[in-house]
Image (cartoon, rainbow, N blue to C red; front, side):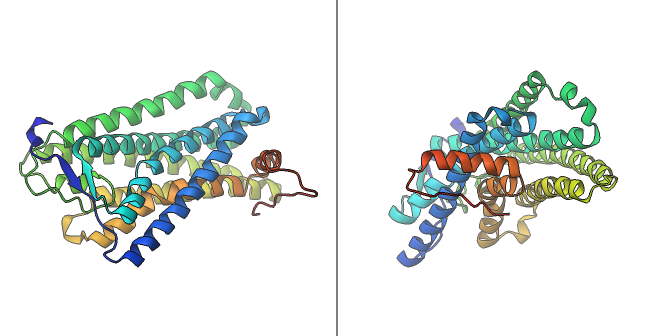
Length: 319
């Protein structure tokens, strides 16, 4: 990092120039952040407190909620602060730290989504072997592997990116520190090393995505053979939302890191970044609980215990 010692801070992107639009941005992001915090917090509390939910599927969902809450907390609070007080500056080490934690949490989330697709594959296609293939010890080991893989990925990219000499200014055209925008500030061909690492990571992620798609092909083939229409509906309702989240996450992430510079623009970059860094953590709790009757009932019980009793009380979660 000594090559860039002359840069002491970066300037993040300002969403708007007028106070009214800055306030709009603040309240929009605050609403999204509170929804993500409440939704993921409820899922974490519900799974942790309900022993009936101590199964592999809910164990992975608990990990997903932790990662979602962590990843969105590395981006939105600073962006909201920029809207109110306009402290666009972020220290060099602060940018590197947020860069590392965001990559760590998002990479770990991707690997966890692979495990969740495998969990659904075993549950639907090999139900008799479910307890053997996904016992409690196996679940802990594979989840730890997902976290470790995310940590290693983030460490490699952070060291590689922040060891580059930067001489193209210090303005990052994004609301958080992101690889493509840091590379734009490089003044050395050494940035090609990080580009190569990004390409390799993209190749690995594409292979993993192919594995997810093949898993769901097998799942859907098995589901179509279920004689009960209710059984087919239940299986599709739990699998299709998961596949939709994975597809959104992968497609927007790949577009961000692999798109050619010729089609890059600040507004497009911001929209795509919001789609892969802000939207999934906010909607995952809704998607994974909306069609899961067991989780909905457990969440209702948790809410009813925490809200003071004032007569008849009921919680109606969306169907």
